[in-house]
Length: 230
Image (tube, rainbow, N blue to C red; front, side):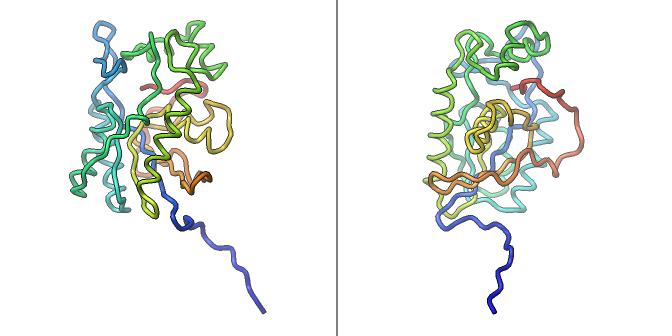
């Protein structure tokens, strides 16, 4: 008599396991000193806490193994990936399409101040779950399209491999919203140094985990409904 067991999930042949790693905590914003910009986007360095988060997540990824390492054009992802790149001796690949959502007039770190002060525009962003409410911000369609394009490019280059992509909270939220068909901001709460996992099998994307922080100690929590810091 045939038996049919319940087996553990395994990626289909040709699929790519993408580990979406949110960068470590970046330096605090000083009212008198906005973050430097690169291509119009805020580009803070990691804070000391972020460097420790980077060390911990990279130690874990080195033990578990990855076949490639990707970062974005913003230095907080490069700095977070650095311990893993040094340990594995790999060349890092830059995927600019997976950089953070562009926030127009709220770039340079102003998002943080606006969200803390919770003015009418900030409340609208959270309530309506639309970044494009911010003057000059990237449209939802443009952001969604480039994030999908970036992830598809990574997957196409690494069939049957496991890839670490060091990216941003808004990007992780967008990827998981696309996979699940959720509300736009349903997954914007990824912690600094966390791991989320998506298996890309052609047009089929499967979420395997979100905001895995087992490698981190407990830290400050963000209240429900707040937009992520960048």
